[in-house]
Image 1 (cartoon, rainbow, N blue to C red):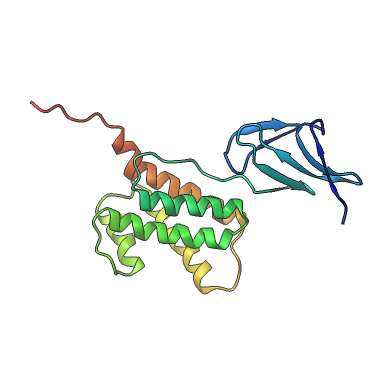
Image 2: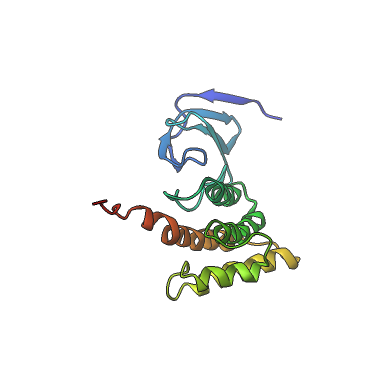
Length: 186
């Protein structure tokens, strides 16, 4: 095994940090002298290490965006799904997106312990799914079922797509309504 060498002047690299999500450039890190394609860069924003080899970044970039106005338990699931993609756990991310729909429904008044189909129907019937948005929810359901009941693993593209759908749903249900001005009390 080759020793790592610390350097404050390795070739600069731009990247999105998998820890703090800032777009940074760094020339500080570690390298192995005879392996030109392997580097560890230290983020100048959070100081955490990111490993690059053969064009792959570890930890990867966290897809999606933080959403405001979301209950803590729902945010925790959404963030876990996002971080799972960055860690390469794409099937787990798809399953978390499915679970996220159940938690959203319960946070909006659905009874706990119902079937997944009942939660999807609840969200649609109560107006929590935007017009033409039932397809999003159904797509999350289908991919979640595939991840649960089929042998095939989910791809990064599958997981990122569901994160995008979940993000839009969370914005529609929580973030946009939280930005409305509060009515004035007479």
